Image 1 (tube, each protein chain N blue to C red):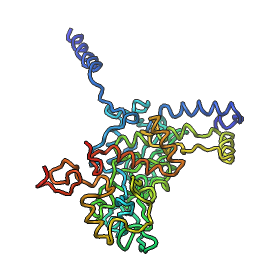
Image 2 (cartoon, rainbow over the protein chains, first blue to last red):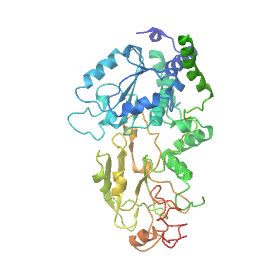
Image 3 (cartoon, rainbow over the protein chains, first blue to last red):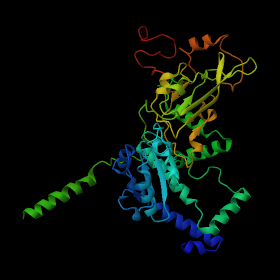
Image 4 (cartoon, rainbow over the protein chains, first blue to last red):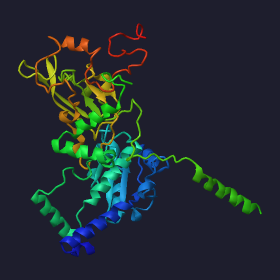
Length: 224
Length: 197
């Protein structure tokens, strides 16, 4: 398709891959695809209080040709599904999809004939974001996770081959890209803590533990 | 003339924002403190000796408007005891791709086994990872707790556990009243609001 299909493998490709991924993730432009209440939170995330502009993506493009990221914000009805697919098809590659909220992720509480049970029936989804609706921080978290994932994406057929080879060697990161919560990933000490916990398979326990430590009103720690 | 003063006025409004406080939250670097009752991901709590509070009654699953909870009950035996009483949850799953965080399951829970934390960073890149199993939901073992299965340490029947929970609830994170509240227990001494100072 593009020039990346003809790139040779090796150290050069790895460097080019890094550069390309960095430029791809550094300014996502989202396609406006607000369908329901989640869109309100999406707008809030673009506003000054949460400010997606910190990551260069405060512009939500009205035209799919200029967008890289489709945030499906809200429940997708059966009637909306072909429209959604068309918007997706009109977006230029490379493109990514976040299914925001439980309705887009799986149908949520609308388990009925009117709602598509998960937008991944229609388009490939790169990040599922639960919540009803997710708060703006959750959306930012999902976007940052997706950015991290893009940073590890292979470039072209040779890049995919190299990734396969790395996987076959067992050279895979302890924490899968795009699985660490953003507040952990952006704090050096907590990041190390999380990495250790993943190696032991107890990262969710760690999360509860840290949360409980922060709640000093819980009984048993009435030292307030 | 009016146009010039007008545009100065306009730019003045913009310029004055340079001296105003920044309203933007510094989210991933300094996560904000959420409201204490914020509905985040669930926790399956433990008794003070480490036994699970969940009795596998499925009331949470019945209360769930989105059918996000799946519970399978199992029988406790003397050799394999996970919770005080007869039954425990042998399988417990919450599908976060369905859960709408309404908290009806918390209200339905008769043993305060299921509570909610304020954790919200739940995005994953596949639907499989969004189904949290019992291992992921269970509260960590605090000091003094022992990994089940083990016999009941705090009494002979489950009743002792539930009566004892008034003063010594183990982890039931988020469900207790704050110690300074009017109606709650103070310092875990068991005295309720009226006679506590």
